[in-house]
Image (cartoon, rainbow over all chains, first blue to last red; front, side):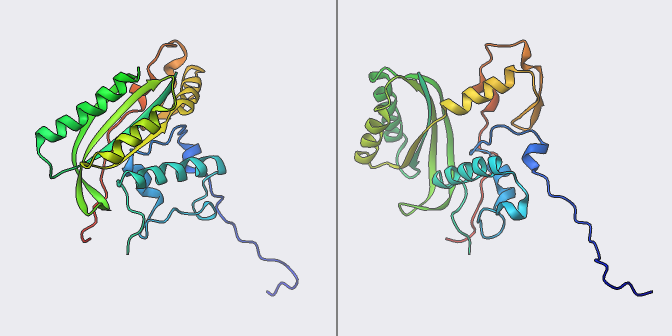
Length: 79
Length: 146
């Protein structure tokens, strides 16, 4: 049966901030294992629109990653 | 009183005596400027994620200290500049972060600190937050080739 003029809806799972879910308040720049989850392959920081992290946590996360880079714990780039 | 944490990466190829001398000089400089050293740790030799001053490996030292005077960061960096064995150093003010964490912890709300959900902070008011958050770098990212 054809349906004309009707929109087809796709149900997208809503992205939730991982850090809010786990109730993480302080992101430690020394916790490399944790930070590695947000810098895959090219070691670029995953944008908010993809990871679904909330603005507040993204800011803290970016700061922690940049600090870890300064300490040479994680690389700036990977080829 | 502001709390700072600083990291010093020393050249891994220098002799132990020189290494000790450099670290004791840093310690002496902090004490001379009336800083209260709260934590001093040697993480030891670790591979660096990228080349720093042509070095692949570094000897990590981690300090947490308190001070009333903010100029000490400048004094420390001045010292770093004239000391060759230190290949990298930086200092972070963690005052605000500790305060926020303590507030949250003592309010009785759930907080995830170092992978553990904590809610039992309501009674303990004089908790040392530093002890809770501190952990050594768990894993080091290794690049196979430089």
